[in-house]
Image 1 (cartoon, one colour):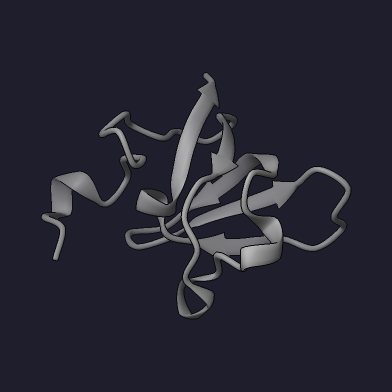
Image 2: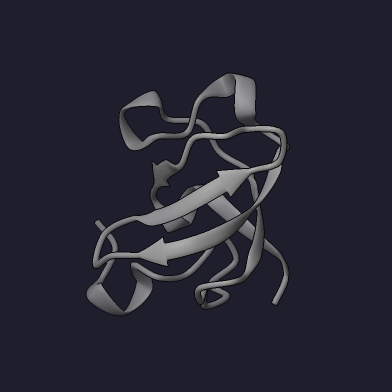
Length: 75
């Protein structure tokens, strides 16, 4: 289990803030990370204590996903 300080960090430990562009690097359907979306990029629109809310490119819906399943592309 990740510590509270790590919850808002990507797979490499980089902090994720609202507006950050990210790429889904891991898969876990129970955590919002579908295999079909692996490698796709999107933008973080909101964040909570446990999840990021991301709009992935080409998708009109918002996705709740845990930060450790993402990698920061551009801040």
